[in-house]
Length: 216
Image 1 (tube, rainbow, N blue to C red):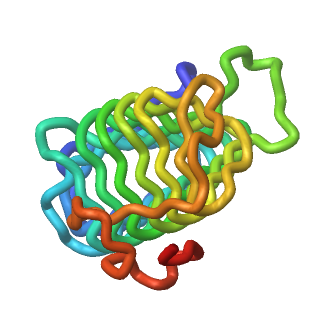
Image 2 (image 1 turned 30 degrees about the vertical axis):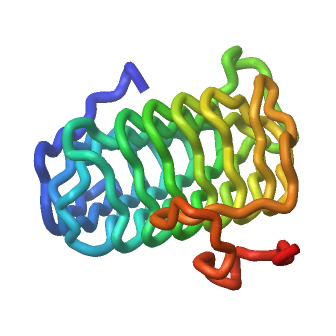
């Protein structure tokens, strides 16, 4: 990417296209660096309670759903390179300093109604470029709470209604309704769920689609 000269758009709002088949659609201001060709960025809605710093390079797709929120004090950083995709679902929220990196034909998928805390890294780029993985993607299903300083690495698949503890490092499959912690992350408790606003335990406050646990 360093050999390419980027197209730089600052605080851009609206539609953009060029002769290199790069396409941008956004209803909120974004800062974006565009390298190469065949890049697509679509940010749905016009919620201004979010700030993005985006870099795309060669055959990438970034899609952001409706009502995605973050803290305006710091940008949500998204980098997609070389045939990679990043998708974030509706009603997902971020606090500060979350970073997403996708490269080498990887995919990062974040579902609906997730909650990300501060300084979280979501990365499909291996530390050593020569290392490859049989699964170089990251999948976070609906209604997952990711705690401060957690790291989601390539190969992780977090099923719905999970809680990822602070500073956990996640690389593998996580069953639904699990609390995980540690490096590498391990299941601490099963049969759990959580609620974004109701701090008192009341399972009936949680949407039925995110509950597979019993009342007993």
